[in-house]
Image (cartoon, rainbow over all chains, first blue to last red; front, side):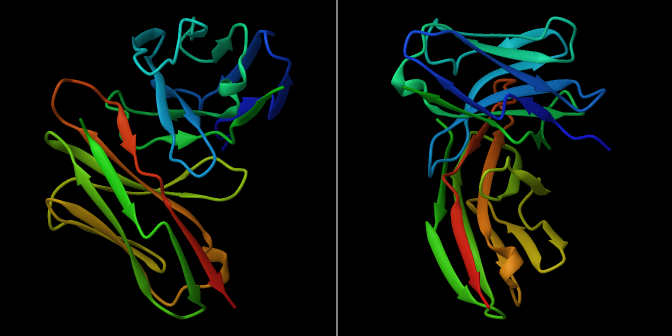
Length: 114
Length: 112
């Protein structure tokens, strides 16, 4: 079956531009996570949804980062006024359970801010 | 604060040379420990969940084990296609938070 998909796969933005990253989770999955992964590091938690409710956004680095999942399916991570330090791979993962144990990851969006 | 430390950072093996990867963790009550495999340019792929000390899970050439302080991923007679970064993550049972904490991973290269 279809896995988690993310778009775009690659994004180059000039410093100061706004970007929007999309995640299509596996159909019916309750939980959805966003992570940031730097080269050579493990994924770092950004925010978490259960259905349409954003239950935790403590990992978002600044108020320039915003995420939504309005209908409990597709999610968008938006970064306003991008900075060079925002350059990273952004991973989305979904889980069929509310305790979000076993997660299924998308391929990621590689964001480069120049 | 939950912590996960993986060792070694990198491991090179010859095909058929068995070895183990380590994941040491500190967590305020373990809900679950997870192993993932990540290939270059791809997202992590789920391998195993372990819930309690003494538990073991196997899949092909991989076996994951769990104690109260660490987990091992044993690779028996590896093949070049086992080359990848292996990530460990823990999820705490306290505080109602489902946020997993990931280690930095072990980069495994298996030479033919």
